[in-house]
Image (cartoon, rainbow, N blue to C red; front, side, top):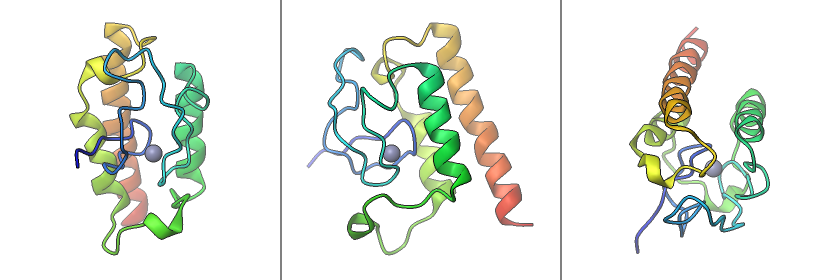
Length: 118
Ligand SMILES: [Zn+2]
């Protein structure tokens, strides 16, 4: 089974690309980890970032506890986001915004690591 990566939480266990192969066709699936519904919670870039920040500030908890892997690390998982191909991000990202998105995720990860190791 091929697994895809959630661009909000980095979970690599979703069944299809959140926004399809063209980045324009949301699946409307709900991520088992962050609980985002693709095409709804990430309909705009602002919405996406807001959802992500909200999820993280609530502790980055699993939406569907039954699917939570035994050994799970939030930061390791968030790192997956940087491996997502640009083409698979939602269509509304400009090239510059794509770059910024990966950078924001990197910053978020280092912020999280500092927080968790305080
Ligand atoms: Zn997710």
